[in-house]
Length: 122
Image (tube, rainbow, N blue to C red; front, top):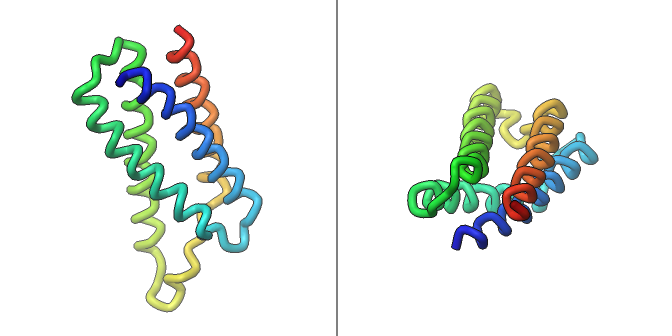
C-alpha cells in the first residue's frame, strides 16, 4: 500500500503543476471547471495523506511526502479563506488567485513530484 501511495503522489504532483500553469495562463478568471476538478482531487488527496500518515509505515524520509502535502494544502485553505473573506457581497464571484501564489504552487508541485520520484526509486 505504501508503494501505491508514493506512486499516486507523483500523479498528484503533476496535477498541482498543471493547475498552477492553468491559473498562470488564464489570469482574467482562473476559477474554471479545470481548477474546480483539480482542487477536489487535491482535497481528497489531503484526506488520503492524513490517513496514510497515520496508518502507513513510512521511513524517516518518506514521511516528508504526506507531511509536506498536508502542510501545503492547509496553507492553501487558510489563504483561500482569507482571500474570500476580503471580498464584499457584490464581488464574491470575482475571486482572483494572485500569480505569486500560482507560481508558489507550481514550484511546490515540482518539488513534490521530484521528492516522490526520489522516494519511489530509492
